[in-house]
Amino acid sequence: MDEMVWVGSSRGVFEVKSYFSMVELPGPTFPWKAIWRTKAPLKVAFFSWTTALGSILTTDNLRRSQVVVNGCYMCKKTGESVNHLLIHCLVARDVFLVALGIPWVFSESMVDLLESWRGCTVESRVRDAWRATPLCIWWGLWRERNRRYFEGVESPIWAIKYSILSSLFFWVNGRDCMSVDCLLDFVDSLKL
Ligand SMILES: [Zn+2]
Image (cartoon, rainbow, N blue to C red; front, side, top):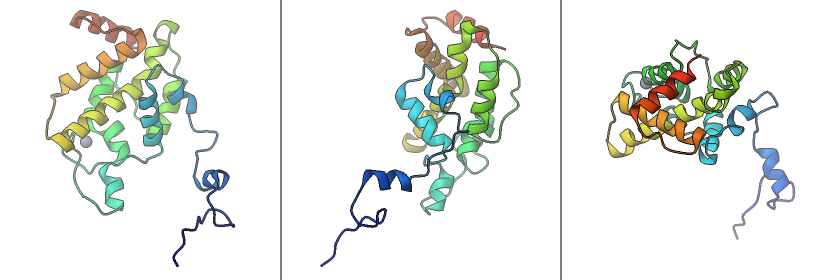
């Protein structure tokens, strides 16, 4: 008779301890605080965490499992990967530029970006917004990418930026930004 056997332990039965020994967790250099100690909602922190570990289902991950091959849904050019979609894509760069007002020297990976982001010294009055900014941008880009992928609906770039900045304002201030002027002031306050 067939029998289910847990390969993670010598006794062949499931044990939590053996499960954790099988899961590859990042080392102490992983920028945990840059993800978990922000004003971003828990689901966004979790998304950023799993994404930084390279495990979201962008097409490069799907390709490895031979599901689909496609270009980037945002810029429609190069193949989609986690780092392309959320850092190097023209759309991602454009959104980051709006938040910062200066061309950001982009890092190779999300982890690198989080580390350099956290290393920036910013005034205390904008610290919460600053820390949550990359997570908010990534969340907004990922949601837009999924709308395009699953629903065939495409928002213009200005609407993507507006939506991301509105979310950031809400996370930091706990209320909606009620006017365009209010949002513009907020963007101004974020600039380095
Ligand atoms: Zn792209």
